[in-house]
Length: 242
Image 1 (tube, rainbow, N blue to C red):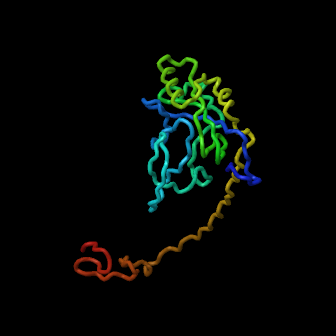
Image 2 (cartoon, helix red, strand yellow):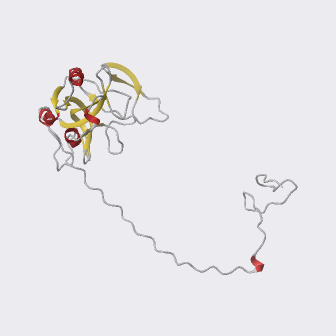
Image 3 (cartoon, rainbow, N blue to C red):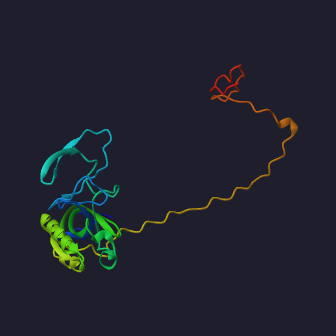
């Protein structure tokens, strides 16, 4: 389901940012990286989604911004996100329950969890969404976090100008920066593909072969004609040896 900033009657418009929740991996410089992608870290402030599919045969380039610095990069195939691709800045609708109630390693450094405010075009799924723009607004910690780990999380929060909050307060604090997607705002269920089992073919018993039908197999060439036996092998095809 696509949500875009236009005036189409079938596309919802939001007056506030959409709040989502996600995880990253932190490095020694307090930068946050996507868990499954090491091409670009998240930047403090505005992050814009970019499709990373290679434009085969294209030499188009464009200016881009990374960590506040301009650089030249291959131009993407399309704006992100779109329904036909998997690009976009990912977020869950709600914090996963394992963050608070489980023993998930997602809440232990170098893994970091928190909240983001998203806007622009959105591709909405059952458990989350993909956004065109997003900004880190809160970093969360467990109640039993070690002092050294809390110091590292505080450094990450300062870098991203984000709130540092306990996990059980993450949703409430994130709500100051936007609103979650309504629970009833979900993509329509996909129709199950119809399938009709093919009819079982009626097998006819094969007649017994008679002696006059049994012949010596004759090799054939690529054009289907019989190959002539030579002293070397069979002419007209690959050499098979005498």
